Picture 1 (cartoon, rainbow, N blue to C red):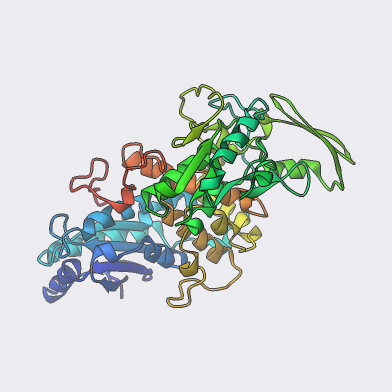
Picture 2 (tube, rainbow, N blue to C red):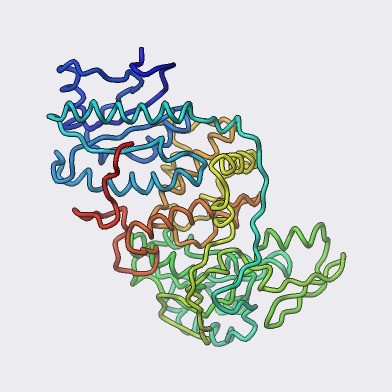
Length: 482
């Protein structure tokens, strides 16, 4: 029975074999009185602990999770706990956006000789979990539907790019085309309100190129599959960050890519646009000016000003121009430097933990589990080995439950920690409009806070923070146990 009053709770402990497991054994040999709620899983090193392990435990009903390893500078494998420290701290800051109290997860360091410290650690953590009580179940939450307020002030002027030198861009592409296998761009889709990716291999293909607020696709998603081929790509500012991140991770070669750039004035939120257009049959005319576009359908005229109908990411975009380019055209509009919070993330910030849990319950009930978010992500390059498809190990079931769907989204977000460039393709590709970009934005903010304002895809030679470590972390400190 538990040494604490009341029913035992479900607490999972991941302990390093060389230190913390030895410390727990030392406490047992000394017959130290300990709570019996903890179920220990021994691992070779704290560096072996993937955040997926903690998430799986919490989503499967654990009331608390404790990770314990060797003290920094005392790792059996020299550096394992340094890497673990960064991953675990990012995870701890990420949990609240899911509606999970971050006090239900903790990590610490205990050596093999510290039996008394282990007793104090496990007793204090168990008391904390008992004070919090059993973990709430996502499936039991009352669905909460809420929509973000999109009326924000952009950092730079939004427009349609009608003055952009498109013909100059076409000429530049044609001049480089003989040395390239193909050039990626955009062309008009099945009607005048849609654009689709264009693979240009001939001058005739180049003539189909279009530029404007309908160019929503991030073409960098195709680059890893074209590795080894000479490829050109037309990028917006946010797209260029994805190219930079791919270069940072050596997923593409700089010598194989020719980057064409013009300043972006924003892209339309096509989900909201299509909702306003409704069930139209034909589009007879599309007119553009500096401020927006007017679409004439068989149901009437519809006006879309860029200041009101842009994607949420566009309002806080500080990189309208490409960060890395071989050919630059057009005039870059000035950016007004000011801190801004994306609308969906601001909405979640204003919610309580219970409201966030209810919000994600409502959103995941709508999820089709089509994995369009994964397929559209330029940084999601391990699709043949994706945890959602793996049966060995079998981390996810095929249950059509909000719990399993949110588990996948948290895994995806954690895999993008320090890597997500905020391009928004995951949310744009979602057929039911779930604001999953907010999860990536929250974790990107946590990474920036912990690692001196780091932003993915800004510096080609920088090392993503979760792929490195510092012996003395500036913003990660031991917490008092309470």
